[in-house]
Structures are given as C-alpha cells and as structure tokens.
Length: 387
Image (cartoon, rainbow, N blue to C red; front, top):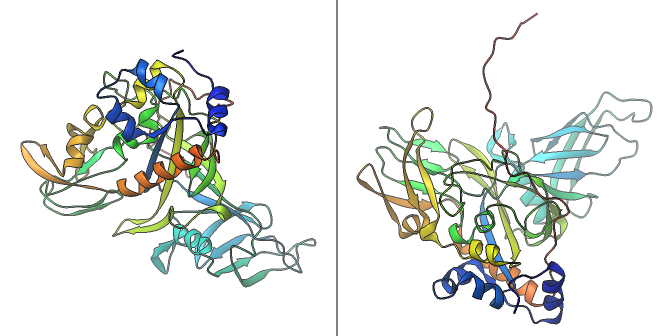
C-alpha cells in the first residue's frame, strides 16, 4: 500500500464509511508499537481538540434596522460596550469587554446569554442624520431577532503555552489563574498531545479554509491568528517549547452550543471566553504520521515567573510531568493545575471523530498555506510631541 494519500481519497473513504479515524491520544498510543509508515497505512484522519480560555474572541452582530432607523454611534449590550464603527447596525463585541458597573460581566457573557436564548438589553445612541434620524433606542434582542451572529476570533488555539508560577511573597492574579506565592502552585494550558497545532507544528495541513469543529458546529480557519510566531525555539521534533503560532477562526454562532462556548471571569483580572476547537488532520504521508504520533513526554514547555517583571524563564517541563500533578522548579516540588479542560477536549475530539465516521464532516485542503518564518514585534515607548 502507498505511504501517501490525497484529500480526495480520504474524503471518498469518509463518505463510504470506510475511513479509519482516531483521536490524537489513540494514535500516540498506537505509535508506541507501530512506525509512522505503518500508521499511514492504517489511519486516515486524526482528530485533535482543545477547550480553554481564548481572550482574543468575539462576535459580529447585525441587529436589524429600527423604524425610524438609527446609525448607531455608541452601543451597549447589557451595559457592555460594543464597537460601533461597522456601519449603521453592525457591531463587534469583544469577549473581554466589560460592563463598567459590573466588571465581572463582559462580552463573553453577552455572547453566552444570546447563545442560550436569553434576552439582552440593547441601547444605542446617535447624532441623527437625514437618512438615519433616530438618536436613541433601548430595546431587547435575542438570538432569534438578530440577523447575523458570527463568531470571529482573531487569536485562538495557541500552539503551545507557558507554565505560570510565582516566586514572590504575594499572590498574583493573572489570566493563568491565581498564582500562589513562593512557588506554591503552577498553572498551564493546552491539551498536550491532543492539542491541534502541536500535531501539525509546521502547518502542513492547516491553513486558510481548513474546516474545523468550532463551538459545537462546523467552522473554518480564516487566517493566521494574531501573534502568529513560527520562529520560536523548538525541540528536536520541531515543536515550539513556548507559545508559538495561533489561528483566526470563524463560524455561525446560531448553530453553536453553550457547552462549547462559555464565559469566564478571573478574579482581579477580567473576563475571558472558553472556546472549543477540534481540527481533523488527514494522514497524507509519513511525515504527518510522525507528527500526529507525538506524546506528552515529547512535548515540552517553558516555566515562567509571572510574579517578576519580564517573566523570566525558570525551567522546562513536559506535558507528561504537568499532567502527573506535580513538577519540579528550582528544586522545589510544585502542584500543577490546568486552566484548560482536558476532559472537554477529549469530548470534542470524540465528537469530531463520530462526525467524520458518519460522513457528516470532511477534511478540506487549505486554499492558502501560512508563512513559515514569522516573528513578533514588541511595543516600544517613544517620546510623542503633544502639539
């Protein structure tokens, strides 16, 4: 049997119900006994998944026109500010935007409320024009009254992410959770060997137009995510040892499930949104088979001190160590806790597997591949003329 396949061949097998689909965890176990050449022959698609806080998320909403109409110039949904520079009645609500009178409630909660079918208070103001004479409106909306409700997330599914610890004598409240003083806990994200971008670290199958599981329905990768960084330090398997590339994703929120889109509020930090993403990886050749065979003992990430300015690196650990419940940093044994749900990621990978096996989902060849030599710029303070 050939050790290379095409998207067309795999999709034909999926439609016929003859394709072999496994989760990334199942393939990692298989790889302990089989070679990549044998895996290519036996496996057609590998499902990957993650479910974690993804702050760079939000929704595009079209409210529909009132009578008389209004050109919305200031918009609030349940008190949460929405961006108003998208024509008369379009808006983008960011997941991390907050109600100033209730900072623990934000854009992610508005999105979840709408997704759950609840009414949300829309209030908007305008100066009034000849064609849009109304200056104010206050009303209720819900998922059935609005026109479009589109999830558009500029940066999701980090390829890898740091472990957060705190060496100072005071607790630190961060987007990685509450970090106890004096190295008393460590938090980490991503789902390790199940994580999508760790199974295709060089983006051989993931690109513009890749069909994915997004929030409980079909969505798409629509661009490299912001902070898409492919030149981070990597191990011998080509996997970055700290936060690397990301993806921008889009899908129809009206078809999504609140089980996979959930609001969260971090103490003394702010609001975020948990997003469920699953990506099928077609096993086209031996190289891809080798990539999807990676296991937690082969995936490393960096331990950073979030309590110190500059977040210095204190060490490097594997996901096998992280998922064991303890790691060693500076000779000290530290308890670990995930800020992403491995249980939910496994459920997503299994659900995507069933979609593929039932012929309800196909693998899509990207229409454009992403750059492989990207790096990041940082913000520098410069003097600005006040004139």
